[in-house]
Amino acid sequence: MNVLWIFAHPEPRSLSGALRDEGLRALRELGHDTRQSDLYAMRWNPVVDGGDFRHDGGRRLIVGATSQRAYSEGTLSDDIRTEQEKLVWADALIVQYPLWWFGMPAILKGWFDRVFVKGFAYGVKGPDGRTLRYGDGGLAGKRAMAVLTVGAPEAGMGPRGAHGDIGDLLFPLQHGIFWYSGMSAVPPHVIYGADRLSDDAYEDHAAALRKRLASLPTEEPIPFRRETGGDYDESLVLRPDILPGRSGLAVHCA
Ligand SMILES: Cc1cc2nc3c(=O)[nH]c(=O)nc-3n(C[C@H](O)[C@H](O)[C@H](O)COP(=O)(O)O)c2cc1C
Image 1 (tube, rainbow, N blue to C red):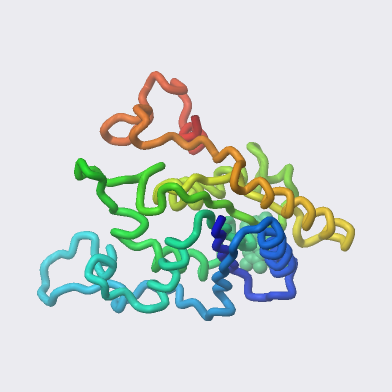
Image 2 (cartoon, rainbow, N blue to C red):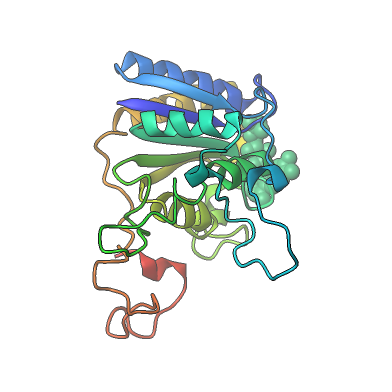
């Protein structure tokens, strides 16, 4: 497989950096081709600005003002096009970051904001004119896996944990980005208690990551519901007969 590794940590000598090196080495030993986007090392610009989308002059209200039209017009900047070419090349995407304030570092969010533009990752229409989303889309057929280090211990990130259920915290990435754009989300690889690891524990974590990467091509993805699978009504609300009385993010898994 062609595997693209997105790395969002400012310090290459960190635990995250060591695991990135370990992971890329393991993938190559498994016979995969790898490429990397090391966002801090690349000095990635995470800010969508006027250069990323264009509007005619005039004072009328602009609907969808930041929906970048430059993709269809072929005027995207080189840094964005380079990342899109890597994504087209990739069969699988690894997105690695430390959990910061319940989410991803801003540089990584800004990579998605600028690279996953309309017409490329979303807003792609099928033959019937319908917009392809949630299981279909510009990146359909690819797999994606989040690899993250977190400070909290595992129990505190369970269903009743104060640090937030890890599945809920990852919903924006796994459902809102991966699945929305068509990619299958392979269950995440999470290193808990990452601020208190001993050297021995590092070896265990490195081995666990290698094992996960070995099953990257075959592991069963998270069973998010397809938009077109019949589970939702016209407004994309889950049908009342499915999981009656239940709500929350978990209902979107079959
Ligand atoms: C700005 C910042 C915010 C953080 N927010 C969280 C958080 O919301 N939840 C959590 O469990 N850990 C949080 N942490 C801890 C980091 O996830 C942890 O330090 C990191 O994953 C350890 O890996 P590293 O040594 O490779 O950086 C935060 C750390 C920083 C610096």
